[in-house]
Image 1: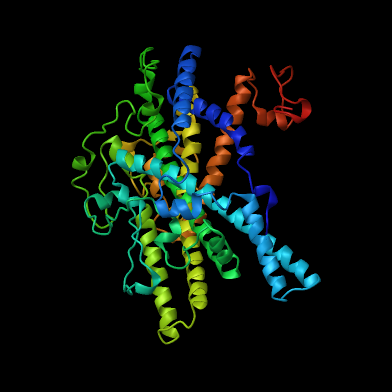
Image 2: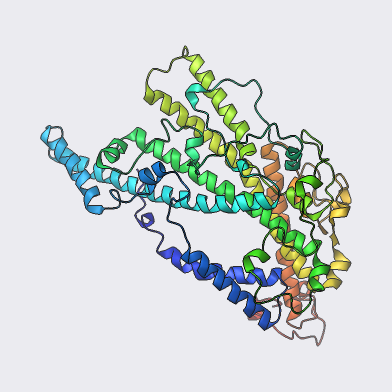
Length: 521
């Protein structure tokens, strides 16, 4: 049994991250708005702090997005957050065992330790579940905002619950589309189910057994203090954390594409902005919306996309908004095929034992194993979007730096524009189609190329190729930043030649870092 004492109340140490988050947000805003003057940076800081203060004071109560039943069973602290009542539960269980002459002497001591260890584990699991559920609710709001701005509906967030016991076998499971824009024309694969409240992730998979729990009373807590209930709670927590990470990936890749587009297709517009563009009355929140970039066409998105071909085929996007649409991730479509396979596996196991599983405990064990397998596959799929977002972030940072040193950009790099985006042109690709050969290190691809690279490969092969891409791009990014920083110190010598001892006679470094062990040493 693993009990992490230091993780019972980790929220206190997280308070220090608020300041660091504000500093990071201000830095990114200044970079997005190309704010170099002190006055512009101060205006952005003021608006950011005002927005942060407004968000802080208007925070809803934890669990407000969930149903009243979930708020009662999970978020309510009336019983389980009272330490005396929880202690009373443990003592009553130990006393009950003693009165029944079940435990004596050392056995009684061992039973007491085991009982309070289970209570402590319940406290830990509940805290992690509360934390991940609260973060999921916030991320769900961000996801819905992204979906709305890109022209998609919020039902892409939800998966219609289908319980194990009533599921029907499917000869062919739904396949996630390679191009998400294809569903605008042919949306037959999308279920428009939208619940009245945000569900816990486990409730989309099994609400009647694995997802049934409560911390609201003494009887409910005692019912949880057995091995099967503990394992059910662990699976419930795994579902919620996986859902949270999936939403992070979906929101992150959409934002990364927006930022990448802001420096590739809108650089001229940004550079031509007047001195009054950053105005104290301009809302920081609206300035970072996906549809607020200067020069982008954001009106009548679905009307503009009426000629999209169906069934995963794709026509070349025309407007900036159509390019950004390809960054949208449908959580529903990513889940539904894997969920159907999971249900098919359960029915095959049920048929293998004559159509009847003997005990609820045996059924719960099978469900837990299938749900864990589902979560691992779903997490593997969604992690690819996170890797793509990291690749985009590195290219965005590199492009921002190259804008400040145009001579290096023009002499060494090839920047791919949206109008030049063509699949299959090797001189425009970093790696080969199978991800095993380096083709062109110096190409900076359009973000849509990053979104679609290796998507036709198997999941494992795609993940491997994306990680290779990330390793190459991150190394190139760091090397270029190193060289530019070295040059900005006023040094004109090649730092590589200096390291090899090829320094020209009489040449001296204008500035040096760290002596013989530093840059240029």
